[in-house]
Image (cartoon, rainbow, N blue to C red; front, top):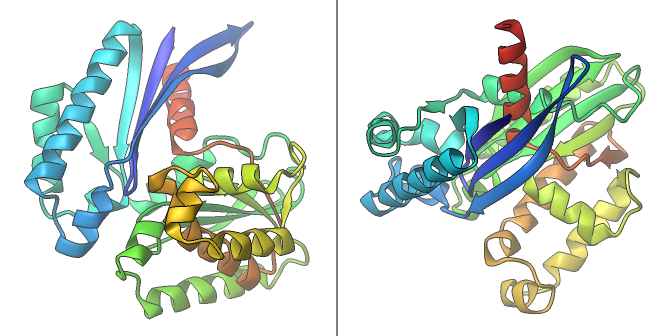
Length: 294
């Protein structure tokens, strides 16, 4: 049995097809196929407040391809979510209707708080000590989701309109940065030690570049050193010398800046990187939904 998860983000659109495993009633999943298409919807949504005809056409074509792949892979259930870019595009509802009619996919535009819950559903904390305090940090193209957990309980969660594409397009505001700093200082001051849990493509790439040992956290100092190293290269050299994909080479710098700011303001000295993201959380929500329907 297979499920599919579609994450329509501000930088890229991803689809994960996962094999669902039932081990004596314990349901888990194994990643089968992951496809990533760098559409950069945020460039239109944040600058012009709507998707251009070209971007909308590309998104519809991508969804048609995803629909065909789901059919070939015999996917029995799916969930498609759109985040910050589609939230801000005035023609978002119009585009989702086109996708439904032309690709046969129901694309759900989710609010930031729902996005944070989906990311948490990925169970990124499974391999660490749940009795401790953790701040989930998910940095996307259009928004950053922060969720603070103390002894396994959610104590604070908020979505901020600060993201990599938004920064590159100069669409982030000083007020939003200040709001995020205040949120972190107000909610972390009661705890002595907080570790970070980073999710998303940029922190996964930063972790691989750090060559840190598997499952070991990335320290603030090492992340800062890696950021300085990457910033010392031009965009062209990040692509040609360091071998970064073109659509990763630019966003990895503002992503690093967001993670470093969050860690600094939250008093976080190290961050775990479990290599999961939105699509993993979506698969888990499908598993949970179908378990309740049994």
